[in-house]
Length: 314
Image (cartoon, rainbow, N blue to C red; front, side):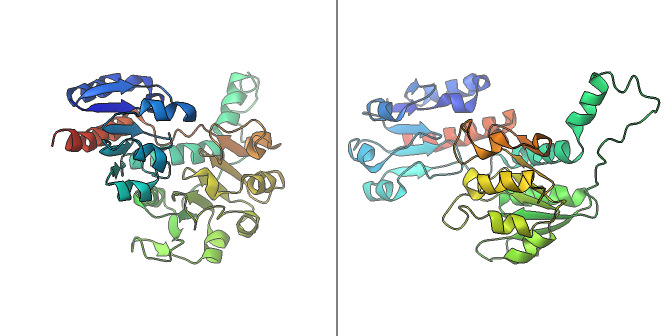
């Protein structure tokens, strides 16, 4: 039987073991919770299939393993693998596409609504006993705004962007989108140019991959174009947004707030500008979790199983 190695199963969660066990039917499988860069070379020695989420596989590693048939990535992004080297060496590289659209879309609105509707503030008002001592049946606090009638801007109209657009429409928002390629991605929604996108959007919602066109695409210039009451949501990739510029925009009240699930460095360092925003009530941070509903992770592993089976059972 061929050999399969999983390099970072911890990224898939502890509740996926029953799904992972199915891979044992395909060959001899070794599971590692995590793999440090200095451990990768040894752990992939002699294997037929590498399964990785974030562990980097470079050209030298591939050349040292002529038996290697497949690198299966438990993610959509493929930037942790040298694709050119894999192609030259005849090694297949397969990723997982469209497994997390529902998960990311749901988390997008969970974060947006939590921020815009001041859910934590209202909860604290009740839990603290302030509501019990109040003379009124209600407490407005910071008034919140409806999405109905607002302009919802989507940066990246792929599978996830489309699902977010559909949900935004259900709330009664008008959807516009911006594409770095300028290509029409969905005729149901309005494609706009760079400046119009930032000037018109009440919500800027990021669902794009990180590449040469999107890296640092939202910085001081774009943030200054945005409305003062606008919200930025980043569940795409951290490198798309200039974190220092975003922190400054929040603290200087250039925008109303932001919800961020992805960071330039992950885990995000304690000295990150976003970790040190002064007006913390205007910022929600989460640990790159939008993709990871239980259903999405199960679907991801199902796609991965099919990818591996296609190679091991030939």
